[in-house]
Length: 198
Image (cartoon, rainbow, N blue to C red):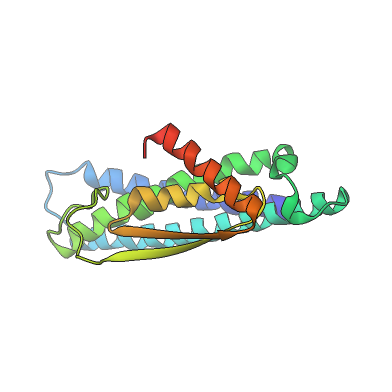
């Protein structure tokens, strides 16, 4: 029941997000008409509501994954923190595919559509571009604390990658963990640097 509820919540949130995208495309397609501030505000509010709905649905799916992981570890008479998440991949895969789709849509709304709408609504602003280390206020930085235990480093890298990709100021990341977690964190960072040239 939890799996079906999580899946239904994700699909419902994705349909909501798609509706917002369609509204934006339809509005943007009429670029020869004067800017309608009420229409833009309505799309922005819908996009914000949809992004929150996606966040809640994604959190529900993540909670189900944690439950599935813990239950499988218990059935195998192993500790949760040392248990390989790959053991639940097959049973979680249908939900994972929809979760990935929801993540892409959520990032589109939060990091692209909503900022663009806010720029149109609030008047001209500086364009939001990928951070290149310049143009930020001196000393402006965000500090992030990451806890990495066991072989869990890669499970949070989608979030870390999104933060790195869409940041607008300097970012300091502090990593805490046990020896296995720190080792796996270093491996994940090296893999990310090798694949993305970051």
